[in-house]
Amino acid sequence: MFFRHARRELSAYCNGESSADESRRVAEHLLVCRQCRADFEEIKLGVKLASQLPLRPAPDSLWNELEARMLEARMNATSESPTHAGRRVPFWWRPQLVAVAAALLIAIGVAVVWIYSRESRPFWAVARIAGAPTIGSSTIDDKGRLGLGEWLETDAASRAKIEVGSIGQVEIDPNTRVRLLENKPTEHRLELARGRLSAHIWAPPRLFFVDTPSAVAADLGCAYTLEVDDTGAGLLRVTSGWVALQLHGRESMVPAGAACATRPVVGPGTPYFEDASASFRDALAKIDFDSLQGKELDSALETVLLQARLRDTLTLWHLLARVNGGARERVYERLAQMKPPPAGVTREGILQLDEQMLQLWKDNLERAWGGPGTLKKTWLKIWSSAVGRVKSMHKKR
Image (cartoon, rainbow, N blue to C red):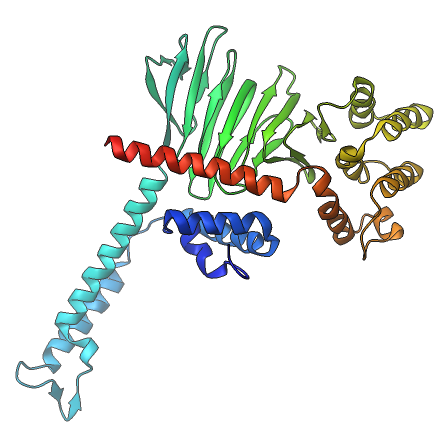
């Protein structure tokens, strides 16, 4: 663990240049330090933008100028003396050194391209578990490769497993259609058009994404299942860690043991723990997706507020931004009764959806949800398992 922050280590960590122990320490710190996570996101964005720059040949004028400079340097230098016309030729401009420097720059460029291409191979390995999965129009025997833009499909009797680079695995259930959208050090992304997948990810937060017709799932170091029906509606269930569901600025944070439904256009609903009562979950779904008004909204909200337990403050906190007027006041009162807001959080600020106050209260509430401490332990457990698998593979080699 870092005493303060991990800024100096973030660039090497983002580019896969850290040792295993150093990577573990940085990842552990990122789980609990919001400031360093923000810096890490900026570095990832920079790497992503740099990777999108086109490769273009240098203009002829540049090479002509370099040749003229080198010819001038040769004419000004002699083998006996490094001076000319009373002036000493700069040590760094001797033609031999210029040539060596140019060679080094070329070698560095080749190495960077090689490393980046090695880390960003345009395919993921796929293994057949059962039946006859297909990639495009080809059936997988035992193993296959899923390339960028290609679809992997399973029928009613087929299952497959995808190796997500070096950061995790995704199992594909029957009657499922998925596509590889991106494979870079800063972003690994699938599209789930229909069916169900189970993801087990041991990477740092927000490196693995799954696009669906009604939300984008961003992993925060976790294991989860995600399913999409023929209408585009989805359901996320998290078994460890956390997952963020997002669409058009609407976000739901879903911890282990919780679930969240999604709908096209609307996006993610309000997360809830799966051990909540059926009436609680039904009332919540009506609030999220049925556009209730008047007495119908009052009735559904009353059911949610009366049946809410301490851990259901997760649901109530999300509801604050999803209802208006008197309904928001009722949610606030019930939430404050169960878990009073910490210092710096006021009733007026919450009712006005002050982002800083909402975040402060959320941080205070997370202990009841299995918050960052639980996420940290879960992620470290997954990390240790992954390191063990890598060491085992190396021993076999």
